[in-house]
Amino acid sequence: MFGFGLDYTPVSQRTDLNPMDNGKDVFMPMVSITIPIFNNRYKSITKQNELRQQEIQSQKDERLNSLESDLAKAIAMRNQSRIKFNTQSKNLKHAKDAEDILIKNYETGTIDFNDVLDIQELQLKFQMNQIESVKTYYVQTALINYLTQQ
Image 1 (cartoon, rainbow, N blue to C red):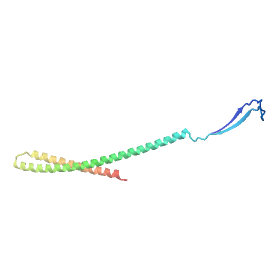
Image 2 (image 1 turned 90 degrees about the vertical axis):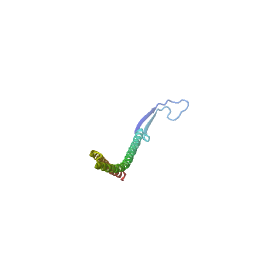
Image 3 (image 1 turned 45 degrees about the horizontal axis):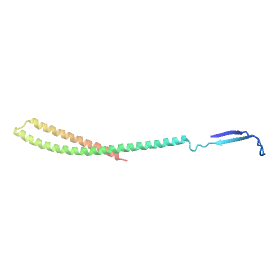
Image 4 (image 1 turned 135 degrees about the horizontal axis):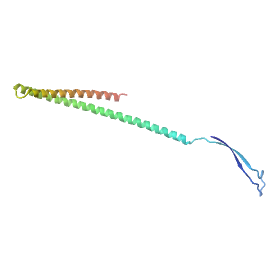
């Protein structure tokens, strides 16, 4: 900012001394320049920019935490599906053994054929669970590959 002004000072005559121009009023022209080095406007813009940078960094950190959480969950689910597959395999083996025993008992006439059908239905259920475990394993593997690609 620039400023122009005029200052007027009335001066009375001195009686004890006789200086030059004694009693003349003084007119002083003035010029002022204001430079906004420490302006509040610039301080607030700087503060806003710092806050925006913190917000962006927080969003990055949140996204990274979310992706790491998704990765950990996918790894856990893949491991869980592997364990589930192995358990279903053992259950299927036991059901197959039970089916063999039930077929022998059916041949001797000691049990009803519905018991054999029930055990075969149980075997199908175990096989369906195995297939579901394999599907989950590959889906989670694909998700892990997606999350770990750069």
